[in-house]
Image 1 (spheres, helix red, strand yellow):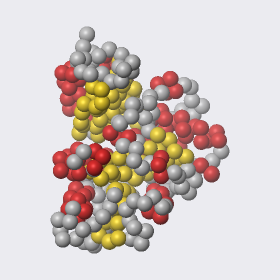
Image 2: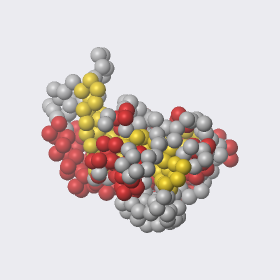
Image 3: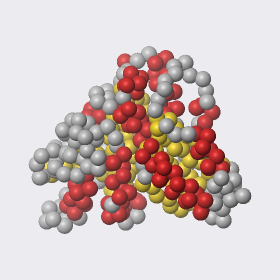
Image 4: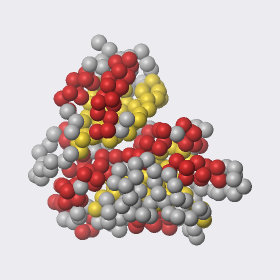
Length: 330
């Protein structure tokens, strides 16, 4: 099954009270013409690593709005397999849905959810992780980030940051929030919203987790002076090289980095220019699980540059820069 045939999955996360459920309900009631299978964690603050508990009854039912809600108790992998089989009519009960939305209510770390699509080859062949969408309470986010490590993790994992409740904040506060979030996660797309109402094209069918489009990195912005200083655990390191990289050196470096720092690296993604290779190499991962694939050919006249963003905690930027430079073929 190629990517265009895969079932897209959107992971919806965010700190308590940010407006995740409001956004989910908005997605389900909007006239987008898609049937959506929804997996929701309904138990609040449940500490689980590699699973997602979602309700109590062994049933899947179709909602009035044409969406499908999954309320199966068990881990996420089993649920996704179950949905796959029913969609294919393998259990004698055919279900029709176009995409899956997973709301990680009460789970601090969306990482294990994203890792699901690396761990299980059958699921990664059938489903395509579209993007991780983090809803942010713009009014309270500074305070939440200052006191909550979990809130920082959710920003770190995001492909899209929905700045909700902007109707409650002054322009100066909004700008300071944008600066802080951009410093923590420069590759995330920022979308502003009130009452979680947005153009759904801004969060669906992006495939940003797969880096289909070239990373847009703003290192100059990250060096700008900020009026508000925050000592965030999470930060982004931007690596860039105009020299071709040696694939063996890159692989050796990544294996070393992951062995030593894997748990600290929440998200990392990049596009590499590898020597003697006419195609871009797309590289992305979550914690200690990663994938690198050959992408499209470099365009005629396109500048061949290797760019990588590492988002994590307590990372030594100088060390990363030096190691990245050592991966060049020269």
